[in-house]
Length: 488
Image (cartoon, rainbow, N blue to C red; front, side, top):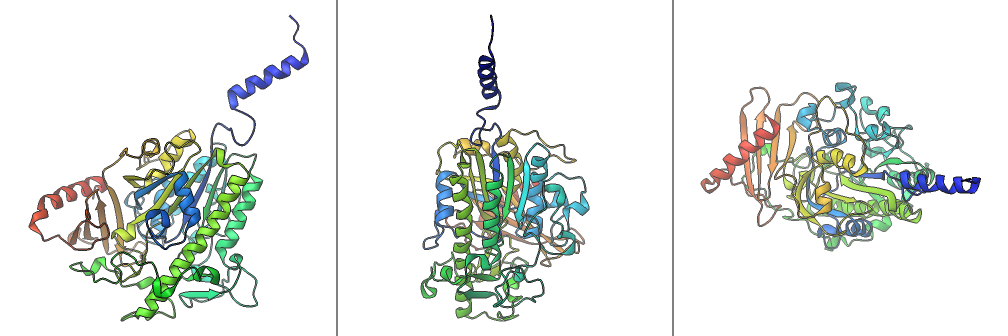
């Protein structure tokens, strides 16, 4: 039987479609990954029940994906948290708890999430703050992770400032100034507006290329500077209130409390003493304005992904690197093992997610990201010196009621911001009902303080029950579980 040229062409096309799927961006075998990280965002998002907070784009994403209501970082500070989830290891495994340690200096051959995707055929791109962004050892943005040089990844946060008469750019010559700025300028006057535009343009370039695109927004990190129109979303005399706003922290050891050190580092906030009620309202207002500004920038990227019809073959991950006290418990800053410090908004959207828009209350940790993305995309598992510490969350994407673990563990240090000179390490375990914290003197290994919180009625409650004999059994069980997880 003769087979003409047309028949051979048709046969080849059928074989190609059968093996690889249709030859367009919507039907590739391995999905793309859009990985969105934001900085210092707590749970003030509309979809998480924050009434009056304007976040329509994140609310929409939550309605199309799986919103995790009990997601926790492994450290409530930028560098150790990002080093942890980008490498799939706990901070105590990496030996990184402070701001001054670079994971690549400690582990030259470790394989990050974007690096692993790059090694398996993806074009890996980093735009914005993905790893820690300050200190000379972080300036290169970890070239091993990327297929092309990263962009907008390097500066201090206070360098992102509008200066009249200057171009819209980072101003490396600026010293730290005020904690807030409200000016009638376009979105691009601040870095996140330019990051969003760069990400939109990159999506257009990558339409025919399997990609891992990490976009790291700098907001709502201090300083709270956003275009005036976002400040105008809120009435300062009627701001959405945080849980336990300005309430005293009763029975909590001094080591657990931070007294707003980050906000106090700016020139318009007193170094010590009481922060006035009016200034607290101004800071709170600025935090909300930057959240809504951030939400708009995220919306630009998600809208473009949909316009290009790339959403049909793209996994979207959204998370914050840790929580933040924006007036909650009377504090402004991070670095705490309270719920506000360690809990984060976390959403995953996949093209074929089961029951989109259904939330989950299953406890998850950010070390679970690495194995989750591997399973979702089907790429091989990495050969690491240490196995990944997390577990895949795919079962929860399939069934919102599925539970992959019964506890999350976080750690923070004193003094705040320390590099390797850590005097005290605070370790915290969160279960469905309780949070238990221990503070250990690193010099002699002795426990110097403990905390126990019953969160069944209010997950933001701070009423230390460590000396309540009714909870002795719970305290003992949580202590053993925490030690076993961390092998302290």
